[in-house]
Length: 196
Image 1 (tube, rainbow, N blue to C red):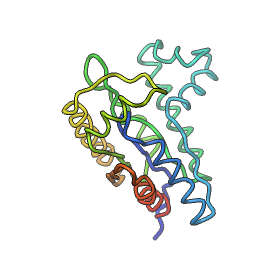
Image 2: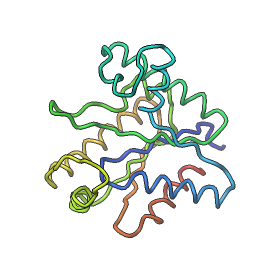
Image 3: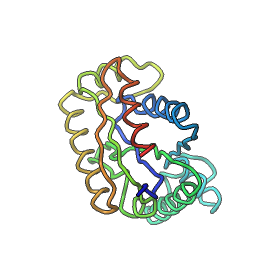
Image 4: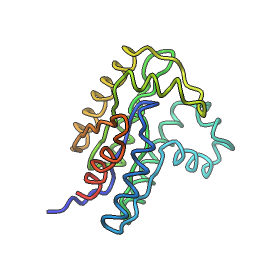
């Protein structure tokens, strides 16, 4: 029996190459099946919901909203994403955990993943030393410096968070390694997941 759920959450810590893997996988799905894949970002969907409700005028206003409103906006964004997935295959591009000065913030809380109901959570991972190197060499972004051991811990904690999503929703959890120079291979694994 074919999977009826059309949403795959794709996560990965900054510098892992998640966006490149996603974009390449979307192209591969189109080539292999002729199907389009809609790539959505939770933050963008939250901004649209919050703007329509009159809560914010710009994206920076999201983080200034009271926590109770942020949670409601997150939940509504999940509902919007689920609605869009009724007619298309969807990748939700997001972070499992966001590193803050006060620890890790959960990027996929229960009220979001329950609304989205993904079929799979994909963690794009890479060697911690390569991630540190990519971050240092990326002049297009302003990234915080992070020790290799901290990057490794961040990836391990993302695994735990992904398993929590799977526990709540029944989604499968898949780890895809984005090895240096082998993005096509990683993207092919993601395309397989999307086409399952």
